[in-house]
Image (cartoon, rainbow, N blue to C red; front, side):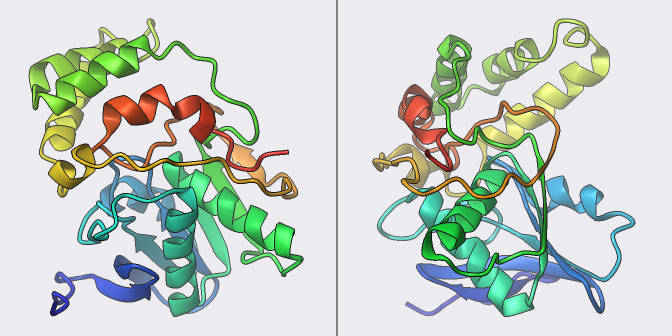
Length: 248
């Protein structure tokens, strides 16, 4: 199969299971890699690069943006980490920033290096809304199951209401939060490659690796660690196993 060319403004790195789309802005050193969260995109991570010196590399994980879902399915956190590492090698990135699922991929990359006794792939790492390091998330999963059902049914109205209700009580009734929820629900329902993800159900497993030295953490510890819609329902039902990014 002939590989499609990169979209305008993007480049393609040779990943372990196919091309990995990324955009590069700025120039010179240091080179900082930005990795989005579940159903996120370069648009989600680009604001975090404001004011960061040197070159900024914004990656799209599989099933996001122009990075396709491989033929063997969505894969695992280890597969996402391998894609991030492919872009790191391609661009020479020495620093990294990850949001939620992107943080999980970075943590797996760090844990694998620690397990193998290899040098750390990055000299600096910052995580926003990072996935849990070594314990399952004990948050009630019922609202997420309802959201999964709404997304599987391609129902943006119901999904928007559930997204709004998942926000803190102090802000969930604000007009801006309602607008965000409607926009986000529309994005999730029409997410590229969603049919492939929703028809696939891989068996993800926690990383059985030593815990790396704790990176600097930014934001709350709770976030989703399922790689993309597609198997929303089953993924969130199994998130207790998923959310051990660096097991003891």
